[in-house]
Length: 145
Image 1 (spheres, rainbow, N blue to C red):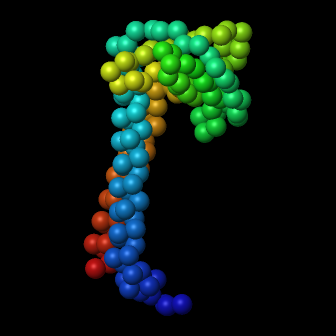
Image 2: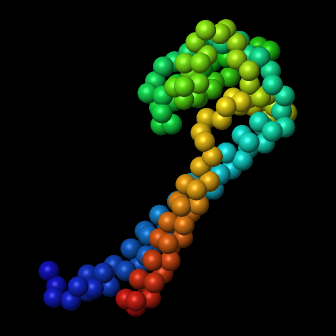
Image 3: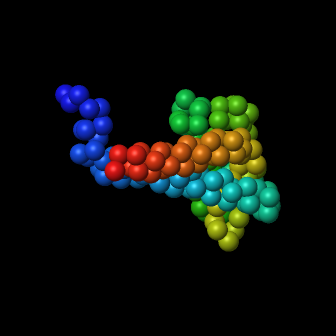
């Protein structure tokens, strides 16, 4: 162990800089992909008509966003899979068909009740943490030149 606390850091400073910067960029990319998926689902819900799809199967899971319940449905010979929370899943127990927004051009279907509430605040917070991680990497690299 060295008496100078930054001596070990100085030796490997570029490794830590690239690791921290890479983690920040990965967080930014993941945040962008979450935002893009939510935006696409919002566009489908706003601009596509409601259609009825026949329910073919149901799978119970934990009913949370990490392990959602799954509803399998078919429409015009194609099968679609919908992930939903426990409350929506239970509300569809007595029915044999569900209403979904269907975009024929993209061949995508989205439940009228979105899978998640709007996580705008969460997306902004994750992006802010990513920017702070990258900024901290730059400040620390300058500090121990």
